[in-house]
Length: 438
Image (cartoon, rainbow, N blue to C red; front, side, top):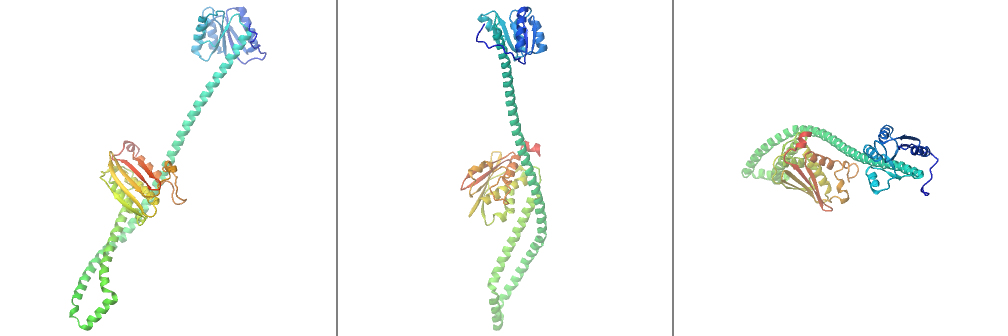
C-alpha cells in the first residue's frame, strides 16, 4: 500500500476498461474499482478471449495480468500494440525482476503495477493512461491542424500565383486587343495617306522636270542679255533686283531637294507604319531584328526626334525565330521608357550582338536610373512612377511577358543618377515551349 497515492475519486470517468484476469476474486475486486472510475467495465478470463473482446469493443484502457492461460498478458499487449500503437495498457504482475520489466517495455506496455495491487495506484495508472491518450490525440490533432494549415498556405500561394498569371494574361490580352485596334487604325491611316502621297510624289517629280527645263530656257535667255538694247537690259536688271533673281535661282534648287527628301521621308514613315500595323501575326517566323528596330524607331520619330539622340552600335545577328509584332512592341516599350527617363541632352545607345544561342539587344539611356527600392517591382503589372494619366504601368510587364513567352529573359543594369541598361536575350531558334503553346 502506498499512503501517498491519490484517493479514488467518487466521480465517474468517461472511459471503458477491459480487465483481463483469470483469478475470479481479483477480477471481482477490479470490477468494484471500475464502478468508481469508469463508465463501462468488461472482464475476460484469458488473453485470447480478451483479444476477441478488445477487437470488438475497442476499450480505452486494457488492464491485464501477465500470467494467464492460452495467451499471456505480454503476448496480448504486443498483439494489441501491433494493431493499434495508441492503445493504453496496464500490466499487473508479481514478478519484480528487471528482465520482466524490460520484456513488458518491449511489448509496448504503458504502465506497470506490481501485485498485490494497490487499488489507488491502479486508479491513478488508469487516469494517467486516459490523460496520455487525450494528450496523444491533442498532439495528433495539432499536428494535423499544422499540416492542414501548411497545405492551405501552399494552396493559397498557388492560387495567388495563378491569379497573378491570369491577371497578367488578361492584361496582355487587353493590350494585344488595343494594339490590334491601333494597328488597324494605323493601317487605315497609312492607306489614306498613301493615296494623296502617291500623286503628290508623282506630280513633284514632273514639277522637277518642268523646272529643270524652264531653268534651261532661263539660262538661255540670260545668255542673250548682251544682245538686248540698253533700255531692255535696264528693265531686265531692275526686275531681277526686285525679285532677287540670284537668290531665287539658288534657293529654288535647295527647296526642290529638301522637298524631295521630305516626300521620301514621309513615304518611309508610312511604309514603316504599314509594316508595324500589318505585322500583327501570332506565328513564329524568321525575323531581322535590325529591321524591327528601325521600323520601331521610324514610328517613334515624333517622340524621339529633337529630344533624344539615338546611337546605333549594331553587330552581326542572324535571323531570329520570333513573333515580329510582339518583339517590335517590346522595343517600343523599352525605347519609350528610355526616352522618358532622359532629360536635357538625352542619349539612347542601341547595341546588338550574338551571344551563344541568343540574340542580345541592349538599350542604354543616360537618364536618372531606377531608384533601388523599386528595382524589384518594375515588371509588376500596373506599377508605375509616372503621374496619373501619363502611364498605365503595363509597358515593362507586357515586355517581360512577351520575352518570357519567347523563352528569353530581360536583364537590368541600373546606375542610379546615370541611367540604366535593359538587356534582351532572345533565343535564335523557336523554343519547344513556345511551339506547344502557340
